[in-house]
Length: 235
Image (cartoon, rainbow, N blue to C red):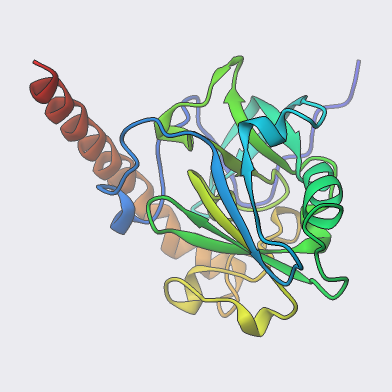
């Protein structure tokens, strides 16, 4: 019997897995299923688009991993299905797209306008996926359909949902930031409690934890409103 996974410092477990994020994006889509089409550009010779057909040429994987939100809630044991980012990078972005050897960062953009960057070194870990399935079912819109990034070793705001594009960057200076500096960290590694680039971890926890309930409620209201509108239009 394997030993239980260590619990990250400052995190508290939830039984549910709510739709969650920056509240500015609660009412933003997509609210209809779209095909996988991730535009890949930046420091590469040949820009290309990741599609379901292209991803299907790579080995699929499943992994069970935990999800840790920077605001201090966690959901354990989620079963993700998809493709290792390392496989996508080497077989597609390097072999087909000619990714520059100097690439150090990747900035991901969502269909809803959200964006986040990750260090390429972190992305090439075996547990980082481009996922299209959750708990044995196709990924739902509330959790990132049609395709999302899953990086269990990093706080949830790095796990970009509804992937629209990725840009290969040679330097972090090329990153287009989103939100104030205190709300994010360049790498956001859970094990090192990198919650903020300017605040100590204890202060970030103290500031973030009180907003969990109101953020969950805001996203629930937005999701209900969209479903009601869809029902009225469909009727």
